[in-house]
Structure formats: C-alpha cells, structure tokens
Figure 1 (tube, helix red, strand yellow):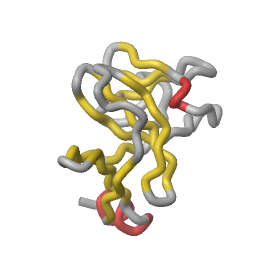
Figure 2: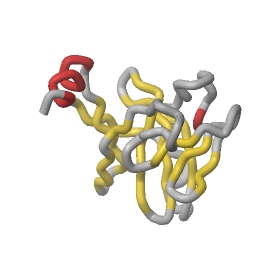
Figure 3: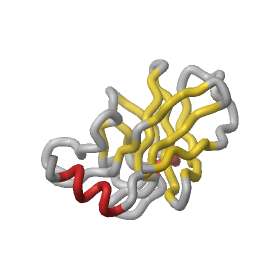
Figure 4: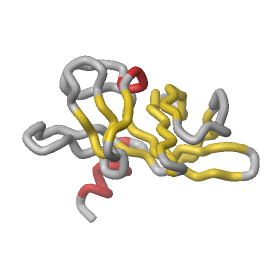
Length: 112
C-alpha cells in the first residue's frame, strides 16, 4: 500500500468535489458535511467523470444518467448492481493523503 499526497485547490470550503491524482489513479475527492471521501472518478455505468456530478443524501450522483454511489462504501443505489472503488484518506498537517492499493492488495482484501 502507498499513501499519496494530493493537490487540492482549496480545502477551506465546507463542501467540494475535485479531481486529483494519487499515484497512477485519478480520484474523485469529495468533502461533504466536513467528512472527506475518495472514490473512483469514473462512473462504471457510462464512463462519466464523477467529479462533474454532485452530492445528495450521502451519495455522489453521476452527471450523465443520475446513477448514484454511497460516499462511504462506493456501492451503487438499489437496483444498480454496480459500485465505484473507494480509497482511505488521511489529513496530515502538510496536506491530504489518499491510500492506493495495488491490484494484488485489493484482491487479498476481498478475501478477508
């Protein structure tokens, strides 16, 4: 596992959605109600850029077809049968960090 510091425009805002790079991954960084979330930036349904979406009732809404994903788990809403990857975040004195696991680390976690 590796933690990557991400560049953000302005963390002083109460809420935001921003596209960031964490290692080789493009991440959708969401700050909602003071909580920080990191999810895949690409919608699995239509390939839309989720950073162009919005948050509603604890979900990130896709701007194309209004598919929605829970911020905490990445699970799609009932009936969608899909999900987006989520990533751990850490706020340190020098910035925000996102944890990116390798493919094999993700596979091994699936069996825990």
